[in-house]
Structures are given as C-alpha cells and as structure tokens.
Image 1 (cartoon, one colour):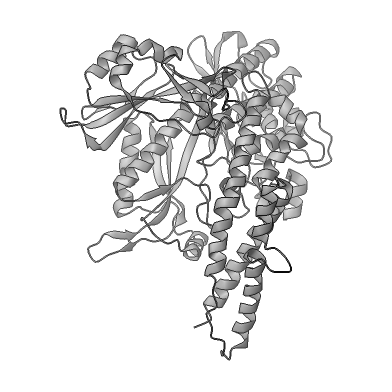
Image 2 (cartoon, rainbow, N blue to C red):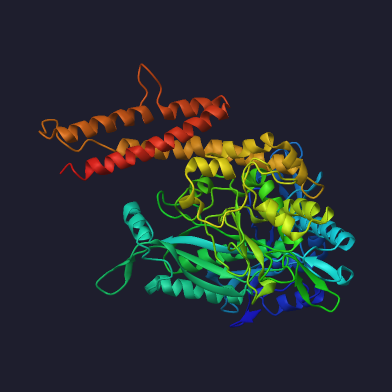
Length: 633
C-alpha cells in the first residue's frame, strides 16, 4: 500500500522475490531491513540490516541462515543458555511486512524519511522453534486439523452444513488497544481522575486540540498500513484538559482506544497489534504527548484492557464463509455445539491460562472489582434468551452475536491487556477451545445439553465442567454477588504473579490437556521462569523503592505545639503505619525489609503474602494521609 510516494505495507503473497526486490529498487528511501522475532515475554527484536544485504542474500533470510541472535539476551530462560545460546532468525513470508519510517532522518537524495522494512520472523534454536510467533502458527495449524477431523467424523449439532464441503478452517481473531496519553512530566491527579470516572465525564466525549489531531492522524496511519481501522475514541478515564492563554492544551491526561478489523489469521492479528502500538506511540510522540500501554498506570482509576476476540469459521468449496459458532436459528439458540464446546474449554482451563495472560503485577492490578475488568472465570451469552440480546461487561468471556450479522459471532476475552503476549494468549485460548470441542463434538452433545451444563449451579452434576462451580451469569457479578459468593461460584482471583503461576502446579491435569507438540511444556516452563524472575526483580527494585519514596514523602505537617488533638492523633496513626511499612526497629523488620529477605531466600510464598499486605497498607496510608494533609493548614 502506497501513499504520498511511500510504501507502508507489502501484503502477504502479493509479490514474489523479484517483485519485492523490484519494489524496493523503486524506493531507495527504504534503507534497512529488520527481522522481527518475538520472544516468550512478547519483546520484538529490532535491528538495522542494510538493504544491500537483503538484496545480496535474499534467500538466506527465509531459510534461517542469514542472521543469528544471542538467545541469552532475549527471554528464553532454560532454553537458550549461555552454553547453547545461538538462535537463528527465519523470516516469515506468510504475513504482511511493514515499513517503519523515521521522520527525523530524511534521505538526502529522495527527500523522504528513511524507512526500515520490518519482516516478522521466527526464532529457531537447536531444540526447535522457540518463539511466540511460531508457537501460535503451529498451534493454530494443529487445532485446525484436530477440529476439522472431529466435525467431519461427527458433524456439528445445531448447525446444518455439509462438512464434506469444508475446505479449511479459519480463526477469526481481533484485538483492540486502550492506552493513556498525557503531557510530558505531568503529575497525576488520581482523585480528580477517580471523580471524573465515577461521574462518567469522559467516555465517548469529543477530543480536542492536539489529542484530537493525534487521534485522527493515528486512524489515518493505521489505514495506510492496511489495518482497516474501525474507530478511535475516548475511553472512560481522564480529566478535562487545561488551556493556556493562546488556546493551546497544556495539561492533557486522557484514556483513548483504537479498533481495527479482525484478521482470519491469528498470527497476522498479533503482528498487527505490534504495528498498531508502534503507530500510536510514534504519532502521539510527534504531537508532543507521552503514551503508556500499561494495564494499570494510575492506581484507583480504570486501567487499559486489550479485549481479544476469538472465533472459528470454515471456508466452503464454493468460497463462502460459515461461522461455526452459529446455530441454524440464532433467535432460538445461542450457539452450535462447536461454540459451546469452545467457551466451555476456555472456562474449564482458565486457571492455567491466566498466568500467561496476566503475567505481571501491572496486569493483576487492573483486574480489580469496580473497574469493568474481569475477576471471575465466568461467561455471559448475551441475555437470558437468544432473542433478547444484552451485553454483560463484568464477565471474563462475553459472547458477541447478532442475527443481522451472523459472520461476526465470537467470544470477547476481557482479561488481556496491551502488554499481554497476544501470540501466547491466543495459542492457549484455541488449545483450550479444542479440548472443549473434543468433548462437545466427540460425544455428539446436543446444544441444549451443553447449554444446561454451562448454566449449571454450584453442586449440580456435570460431565465436563467442575461440579463445585458455576460458569455463567447474565447479571453484573459485582453487583449481584458478594466477594465471598463470587469466589465460591466462579473461583478466587490471584493477588500476585506468584499466586497466579502456582495454578500450573495446582492443576497439572489442566496443563496436560493443553500441552502438545506445538506448545510443549518446556516452552510453558520457560515462560513461567521468565515471568517469575521479572516479578521478583520488579518487586525488589521498583515496587518497594517506589513505595518507600511515598512513605518518606508522607511528612508531618502540623507543628509540635499545635492545639488540634485530632491532627496529632491522625499523624500518630500515620507515623506508626509508616514505620510498619518501611522503617526497621530493634523490635522488628519493616514489611519492605521482610519482603526483600524473603525474595533473597527465594521464599516466594512469604514474599507474595507480604506483597499483598504491603499493597493494602499503602492504600491505607494514602487514604489516611490525604485526610490528614487536607486538614492540617
């Protein structure tokens, strides 16, 4: 796709070798090639290879012999070791390639910005392919073969199609990106943000000034790169910007969202997401604004999600597309047996999927009650009956369906965030869906029977799902149930990364259901090892120091001779809390010191429990000091 004399994307399969090289010869401003591999933490590689090397060694780029990387410098723990660190990079010809332009570096000959051709790639170790992209590619190939064999043998209950006419299965997959933008070096006014959110002042409001310009330019650029944007809009978070005497916005703090069209190839979906993040960050930076994709950048205010949509369809011999989640009559049934099986499989296995979706402290901070983020393993099918659709935004997996648009039926997974490794998350969603489809299709279950099992109450018998649990709610789970009731019905949400990953050992049978040749347990263990290492390091060297700074900054404001006993009482309570959190005494160590001691001893159970206690105490300190500081004047 070209615009204004620039090439932004080279679509998959549109050019052969000679066509690609001819196109690049016509655009000498494209001076570099970057092979973009994605490690298990979701980090994408970026290097500058002169375009002349690409011309001379084109074929080597695609057989993995052109370039290697030091595997110990990317996140592949337990696989790429210091004694066996070589990792070959193999370019992927089956997806779109994007050209990344540097507007700060103008080519003297053409007068155009210098471009880098970013080619998504696979990472191959001596033990096999070990990167996130290859895991998803091989997993979806495996799931497609397994599901197609099942439905050709058993048919699909509730969906009347000739399965012999199916040519191939496709996985309709999409993500959407939420993010915060702000003026550089701006202090965050948490309580103002919280009040604005509760009063619903920001959602779907007009954008103004530089924010409007950046958002419009972002949507335009997404279109240039072939992502087919659907909209950009304000999200729930933010406060009204301040304007100087010249009419310029000088105080910006807003939450935004960009959406683009789904892709039938999950790997392309995840590649598009990386491209979109780069576009958003660069466009807003060009307009003097900072962007963060953190899941919970501001405590006490709505975080940023990246809702991930999953679906399965079939391409028929006549070229038509059939959504396999749909029943024959969408006004009488919610789903076909494939659709029911898919969501049942995801819900049953979510305890061991969650660690890979929410692998950081930041991601778990977002998953709290009251912020439209899921904390329960539960689904909603869009209403009590199929003919009266609703949307329940309090669940983990929401069914999106419309009789007017049957091709679009899919499940929206609401737990992922912008830093979730989408490749890994999608691979596990589809592997779990496969397990549920094996049950639903292999046992030739009727949709009515599957609906009854999915809608069971705790204690009701179940053949596939767990007897003690419930899995469906069409009401707001935060309003309708207490914390204890939610935990009893839908499971208890983990508080820390360590708690989250303990599920892998607590539910080994669920992990066994998902492990397969494309996504081996050694790869899962490598992901786990890397995530826990980052959790421990972040806790010790970022979270604790940041909290200590807040503890130290909470200083006495009243004078010692102040006659207001209330202020003295409040400060006494605050100071005791400060000591408990951060000051060692002859009688005991502070909570922060106890955490550091536990981490050094690799006693992660203790460190995790103390982390929860520290978080609660920090919240208590913030509330107490706000009350005290606004009275001591």
